[in-house]
Image (cartoon, rainbow, N blue to C red; front, side, top):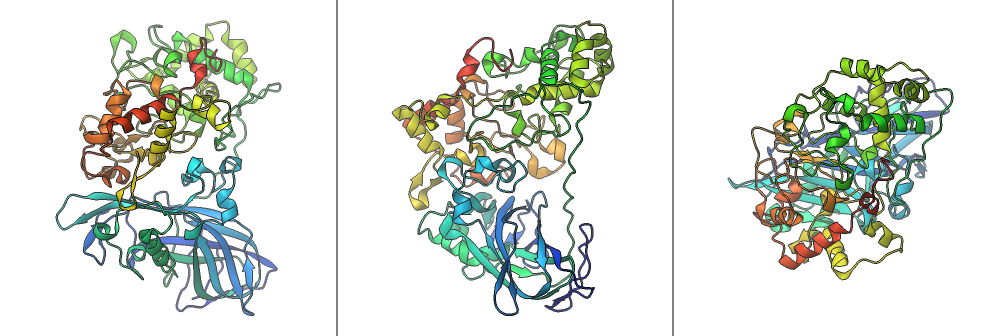
Length: 594
């Protein structure tokens, strides 16, 4: 195999044999890219496709393939190993995140490539909240940290399986913990003289069938890598043999990283806003082009509470986001101008700095876009943006407010969105009884402790574990992974959720996973507000889950109906959920919103 001159936009390779030879003038050091192509057998992996069959005759699909790579090294001709400097990378099949870039690799000849699936014990035990927002080990980015259980998931492989003509069921294989750090060594012949790309094939089918043939029915549909788990041991053994150097040319469609953006309309004089968050929270990716400044936050607060944004001057943003309800709407559906009734329950507006898509279906890519949509919605504020600009221009207080926030009194739609975004980003929630118990300031009751234990424990009868399995979707300090899932509600053709945005059938009935912080304050529940109490919510996950082809694997792996929790278990989980209430929302006015 020969590696020719490449760039970030070109990764085509000539691969006639297993010899990677660079032919240009030597350099002292080069950049090496590893490109991980995901396959099932000899063909590229297709997600959400129940088309693959294992050696046990079971059909299977992949809905999630997410894993960590670390410890890259190259073997020199003398047998010694050169350790590459970059510590870790996160790969994700769904978003085509598949590149790992290693810089300052000395020129020379190398005969093997080695890396680990997972991360070393030191990094695995490190505090994840110290990672930068764009670091591959930031939990809010990769979604692979087990929060209070400690450590990272090294590989998450999830999907559906079916035996014969039976109904699809879910599987969730989470390889984790230090004993399951998996080393992979691949032979190659690399004469490195300039920047190069090594294409690595990850054959997911080999994870199920290589050294050991894994059967969903016989070996189990879940693993959380507890000590001595034979399924986890088999997965590790297979995983080590699931990688190879690509025998044919390969390309990647991963987009280049966005450049740092220049701040928009920054005034000459401003006061940086002191952003606060919980000690356990991961670092958020705050927008570089809209830095948090007090003058802009204050303008956003004024706009958020101003009824002039609606057509008839009767409602503001705050009308449907009540402070006492943790900035959600206690009504099942919000009431707009002239009595218009919405079709979804208004989501709470806290900890938005960690979200990447907004609304129940994720149709808004950022907060500045999200902020303007309700203004124009005929069922909500029913006003045109041009009219809003004209009305604000006639209000005396806004000229100086825009001057302070943007360095100019000019009012524009863009600035309105930026100001409201600035304000919403500051609404953080991190002061609950649970948080105070983590810091040692308060103690949970016995019921709350039992509820937390159930919350963080998987339901895995094969290993004698019968927990509530809540943490898969609501884990971490934010109590959400911000993903979109079909959580077992009956699918309504009138509202198909995420699929209306993505135009893919696999997202039918999928909606955003809400945070469980302040859950005791944010009734009613679900995207359509169908449940009025937490007891009804727990009953749904216990016996009311509707099994469909798009049901999330972490629910589809359970028996028909759901978790079948006992009365005492449900009571304990609810007790814990109530301990997630931020005490600041109980005060009036709310300090964050004034």
